[in-house]
Image 1 (cartoon, helix red, strand yellow):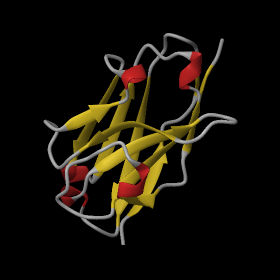
Image 2 (cartoon, helix red, strand yellow; image 1 turned 90 degrees about the vertical axis):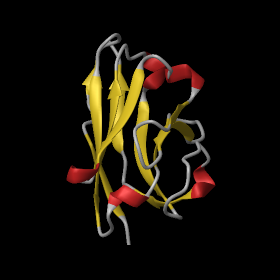
Image 3 (tube, one colour; image 1 turned 180 degrees about the horizontal axis):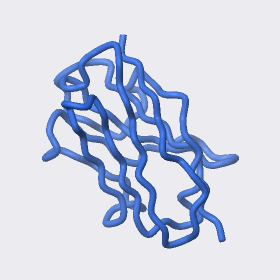
Image 4 (tube, one colour; image 1 turned 30 degrees about the horizontal axis):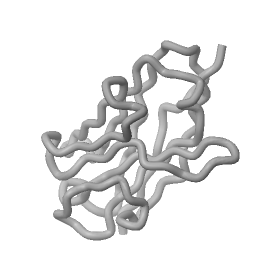
Length: 126
């Protein structure tokens, strides 16, 4: 079973940057699409970005396009989310998730993902 652990969340000022990491164990990450989701206080969880088997196939929600970059290092069994030009509205708990089915193109739909990490807190505030 795929197990995921997020790290890298922190308190950062508006305009700052963070890099989140999603480390995997239990199964080889190579075969699975990985998504990043976030949940702000009082709001539903939303899809932020996802990456398929290779870096050439990625997707982003409109609000983070041009600011966030998702990538993967299969040798390290890790997926990263580089977040630049952070805004207060980026605040929330960020979760990474693994697709239920291997070799599938990633989408920002939560029901595609069956393996979830515990989340890491990102707070953007001055």
